[in-house]
Length: 115
View (spheres, rainbow, N blue to C red):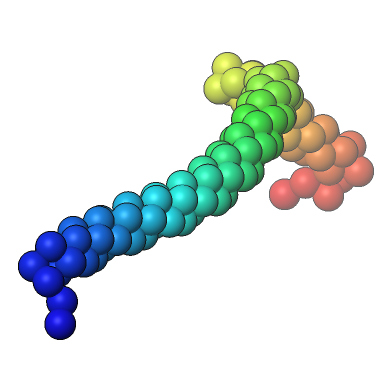
């Protein structure tokens, strides 16, 4: 038989052993969590680096598009016909057509074919 002192000693040893087991499990879980956190941090850093590279490329493309648009606007402004210019050209064309009509009438009168 086990004496009371031996039973008490075994109980205390069992209690201490379960406490040690709990601490060991806690340390293992914490180590696993830290490992997972490190892996997550590395993955997040890789994603952040990719995002920075994509943002830099987007800025470069936007700057290129802005330059091309500015050049296009300059070209259009240089080649754009204003309303005053169109009105002047229309007036000159009407005068030229009227002169052609007069010249044709003169030709018909000289050749005797006018009615």
